[in-house]
Image (cartoon, rainbow, N blue to C red; front, top):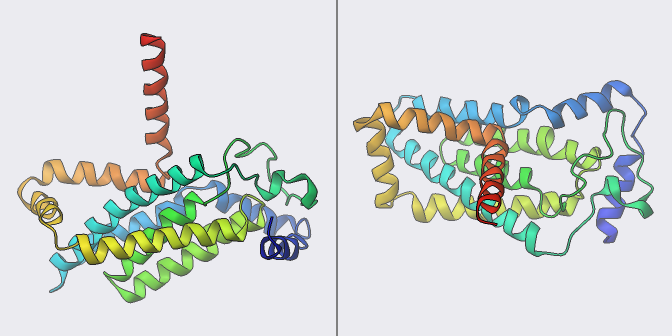
Length: 235
């Protein structure tokens, strides 16, 4: 563990167990998908249906951002699986971390902490929203930092560098997508489907934004179950 992570974690952890209200409020934020991805997914729907002279432009950026979310999560998971396993502060014995009230010591025990999936996904989404509305995008960035990322440091689930690395990945992918991909024929094709076949587009749009709110947890569990079933059948 580097000195920067150690210094920040040690400083933040001195406030642990000083207030049950604060600790449990941050634990509630950590566990509640509606207050994490649900808020940003709602903003996506608001931005999609906002009617002004830039509607088509905004919709292309929303589509590009949603595509970039998938790419960013794949990159993050690939790094987490290939880089050396990193224990979370909560599980690091030599750190003497004092768990805040409400924290379960077994949570995320088998998952490497680097990089933070939450920082990757919601930074990607927030940066993408800046291309739609600077005010709304700024709100999304601040919301991600304060209500999604900070609790993960305070509760001992991530080091600051896990969050910073995740944010850099998310920012990079979102910028590339919204600069290079936004005017591609593929994005235009998807937008056209929202007009020509709304009965197909909007159910899929809902499912995708639901997966964002859920951190793709449901989708990943279905994939894992499918892989296990395949292994059982063809073992």
